[in-house]
Length: 275
Image (cartoon, rainbow, N blue to C red; front, side, top):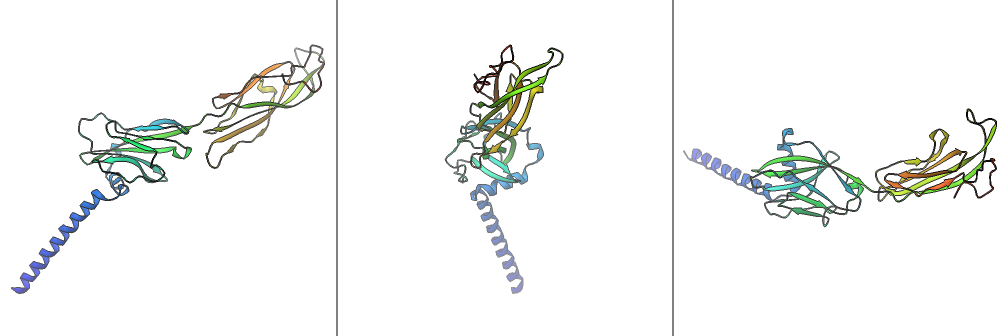
């Protein structure tokens, strides 16, 4: 009988210990770091909880607002904006029952939560912020997840366009002219920096069949991740031509090349090819 009571007492103590342990675990679940909470939410979320990916664009150095769907009458218990990076989840900012959340240093002091609008503002956007984000809204402890793809842009400075060299060109023209006609072979350069994403040079006023690309020197800044675009071409012309170049949405001033070619095909000396 004593052994039976001892056994029952042992079972009772074990049950109390297990109950206490489970209680502590549940307490820790609510008070632990947000990274653990978000991870658990993702594990319980199903693919049916995700909507189509929303695309938003932010300008480099400016701010952007991640706004979650808000057509719901049930009170929201929490909101997390998190980034999906290298197959891992990275908490950005949010709220959970008015508790303070632990924000990573790279987002601290540049994010702001709006509980009423279910949104998070991120300031001072950099190229490294570009990527896929998730909005997790908690209703009755059930996560509703929507995805947001952030794209970053930066406008290029006004391109610099230059004529670097011109030389006399002799070419037999067909159809319209008989005999040899004097023209010019001009080397032109267009460049601009500070833009994102990578772009290319577009020339205006030139005949593509008379244009040859001789150099492309695109490079990216290691710190800002913005691009410098640089292209040199050779263009054959037979009359004064107004040209410009564009990179991204930035357009250069116009210059005039071959403006020294006369009706008698006499080419001026060093002043030709630029107005």
